[in-house]
Image (cartoon, rainbow, N blue to C red; front, side, top):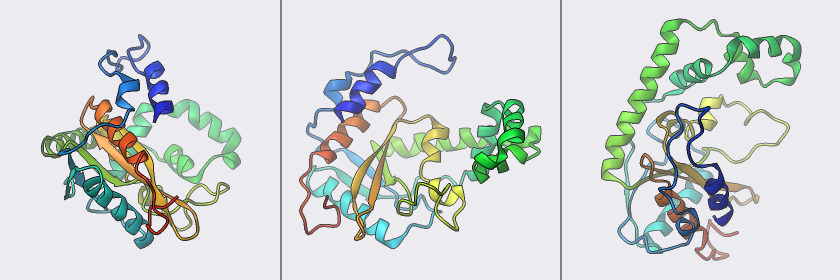
Length: 243
């Protein structure tokens, strides 16, 4: 976590070119990356967000990792879904609205054979103004629901991905849409919440499974502190989270 803290100490803070950037200096990044007492930290665990299908082997590794947050770190864990519906359609509309469609479409015309199918689908969609504003409504809905959920929990934890890693030469796991295998990552992006992925353990074939930690708005230090504490836990060779 020290590497992540060092990177954030450089990256965090305002930039006059970005109207969404916020003041920095509110987080002592090196200190946040030092494991400390987390006893009583309220964790909400959502293994599916209420709508994603998770591979049973992945679920078993993440379940075991979450159990250690309670057993070994003294956190309080409640399994509870945050309550928003699948934001996939609105997410892509936000991507379209936030990017340079005209410029990317010019690139796609010349380099389609080098671009991922889901990027081409985004660029080929004849977006309407209503779809783009619906995307912004989805963003607000996820942010508002996340705020309510995180008023009762200090962090939300989920699998990072519902399936194991796929070969590098593929754009994604075979037979799955981006929403089906990236869906755990989108809510934090939509809501602007701090999030991190830490290794939760390995599958029987050696592939890693990730645990995602999502914090309240501006609660980066809490996210980093929990990630650092989990990273320092010893791994026993007989557990699903062994390294």
